[in-house]
Image 1 (cartoon, each protein chain N blue to C red):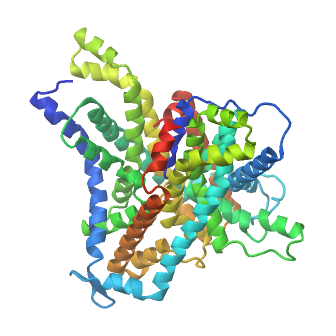
Image 2: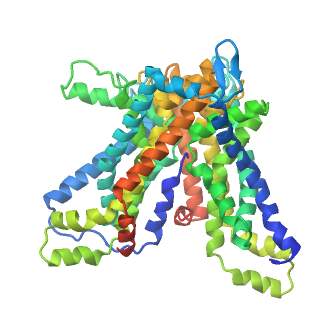
Image 3: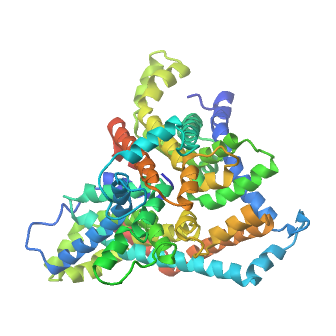
Length: 291
Length: 297
């Protein structure tokens, strides 16, 4: 197409404009949240425009709110660790089993494509008093009567894991596939056992995939909403739920906005620190490039 | 189909040389048995909630039980009755389905047109601020939908935007647009520009080249993007949760209202219907485009 002419110089902006018009809203959304978090609020007067940090103080001084923040980080961390433990073997199977690779990939991706409410409903059915899990527990003699599984933190963890596992498996499997097989062959030729080869060659080279996966899963876990809402049953208090309460029930928008800002900021800080911890000099990243 | 950040890595499967061609046939050692057992356990965990819904939808009881009792299609009949608005059936279900369908179609149309235009602009031209614009258009993929929903709620109240359809439309378009951009962009990156040049040298003007050469060449990317956008909007819950007002409810919101007050097998039948739609979309995409090419985005 014509470049250099006036039309050619204006055209790209004209073509981008409709799409960018929608993205203006996302910038507004972030901007308003930050701005409102500094407004004042009282039950009688409602929201009063101003510049104060009282909402932030209220958040950190109220034990209930602060505990929600702690339990959110805890939930995200538990799910991230479980996702590594459960996701790595699956990723490894994808990389070594040519026969079942496609089948495993489909099983990993299908939950990702499934409606989140449908998935949550599936977990309700599985974990309810007469559900599959309780039938197994009772039949195995682990408990006399059905155990309360639904509306506990475990139910929320299960649902969140189900939602996030693909984000752990796919990056790890991607890195594992790129590892040069001659490295493993060389290791075997030199007399290393399979376990030794895995520990000294495969595992270190696949760490960048683990890093990418943990970042994604942790970020998703920090702002998880549907699981706690439907499977928490009021027993699991996380940030997303107390933010929902402030925005939709109490209507203390400055506090809700401050909580949103804290949640996003804390997520970014933790991810940044974790990234630094994992590769302080960016060594891991370059090592995978050579692999 | 909620967030798809991870899907990009599928690309490496489709493209990377499959170096390890599988475990060679030799006696199983303990490590492989353990690994396979763990793998099967995790995959069962992934499949369980979906399988259980399908089983539950054929039950003859009015409560959810395991193992499901008998086999009947009564809950599917009930679903059809409800759609027809028979007395004694769930009110509002048909409305919710039509609302979500209509919303999804409009979202898909808007995303396809604006996203394809943007992808073309980013591919064809070099201009000031290109990288920034690109990053901005891809921002919704990494932006938490919880925060997006809350931020839009605040923004719309500031703008006094209280039309239920418009609120959801803007929210859903924002979430789905990046996928159209990626899908069309991936298509543009691999097609042969020489064909376009040939058309131009044979006397076609810019518009003719676009209509008869470029658009047919990137057709698959556009179709894939449109379907992504539709399914994405149809399944969206978090953004809808904060933006839907009044009685106009999209389907996931309607299901949520029922699920929190008790969960009868009708929900299972609706879920199977939704699952079927997702599977149909995936199969259709595979037939039309080939999943590997979609995944490469």
